[in-house]
Each structure stands twice: as C-alpha cells, then as structure tokens.
Image (cartoon, rainbow, N blue to C red; front, side, top):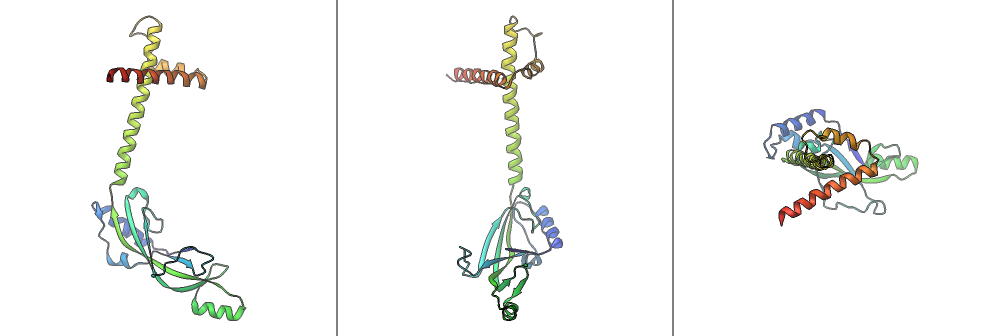
Amino acid sequence: MTEVITGETQQKKLRDAVEKSPLGDVDLPKDLLDFVWFRKFESTNPLVTDTKHVQGIWPDQVISHHRLGLIADDGCIVDLMGELEGEVAITESGDILSSFEADNREDQTGRSLSRFSSFAFKLKKVEKTDGPARNHDLAQTYEQQRLEGETRVLSVIEEGFKKAIGGNNSEGPGQADVIEFLGTLTPDQRLGMLQAAEDEIVDAEEEASE
C-alpha cells in the first residue's frame, strides 16, 4: 500500500531543475532531498508479504513516477530511498493509525488490526539522460527505412506494369496508379503481389553482392 502525499510545488520545482540541467546528475536543492514524496507500507506478517526490508531502508529506482511529476519522456533515472519510520496499523476503511492509536483501538473493539512497517521515500539522486532524444532518432530512422522499403516495393511493381504493356515506357502507370490498383485487390492477392515484389528485391540484392 502507498500513501499519496500532495506536493505540487515540489513537483514543479523538480521539473524545473530537470529541464534546466545538462545531462548527468541533476543538482537538487536541500528541500527537495528532504521532502517525503510518498510512503509505502510493508506488512509485518510473513504470511502476507514475501519481502522484508530488515535494515530499515527500501531503495527504489524509477524512470517515471506520477508522484514526482516525471514521465519517461523526461529521460530521468531517479533513485529513491525509503526510510523506516516505525510501525503503523491500517484499518479496513484505510485509516492509518500510529502504534499507540492502534493499541487503543484494539482495546476498545477487541479486534486486532493489521500492522505494517511505514517507509518514507525521499529523493536520493536524479540523473538526466539523452534517452528520449535517442528514442526519437531511432523512431525517425525506422520510419525512414519503412518508407524507403515501401517505395522500392512500389517501384518494382510499377516496372512490372510497364514491361507488361511493352517496355519501360515513361508514360506508363506510375506509383499512384499502382497504389490504386492494389486497393482493388483482395487482401490475399495484395499480399501475394507485395511478397513477390519483396522477393525480387532480395534476389537483386543477393546478385549485386556476389
């Protein structure tokens, strides 16, 4: 379970620091390092949880976190450290009680409450990377390769049409005509023609490399 802490001012301050920072470790002011961004609760019942942070710390690393106001496109690697605050109880309605309050509630109701270790998470380090820029360049390269591949396939089909009507006639059908013709075919017919054109391109490349 995680307790959300409202920190809109801190989120804005963190985003400003990230945006102004060069690549590398972001220089964070002390108030952002001391701020508790959220809390997580770990059950003290070994039958409920298979994790146990016995040393009183809970390290975590994220690339995005809505409680920090950062998303993956910001290109940050964020190191957080959860520090053990103590034991709490959580009621069925979601109320968080201190150990003292929980003891009193149990005495009054005669019902035991589930106990948890409370960890307060603070920023330890924020590293700004060029990940988003590299992803953008990769996407552009992929799109360019895809368009070039489609153009080559259409060119092969276009040349086939020109040969069918008698030679490489520059006045013959163009790629717009090819696209229009492909639209009249059934999916299987269209796939077959495109596959044949791709096979012809592969054969030509293999011959050129020999």
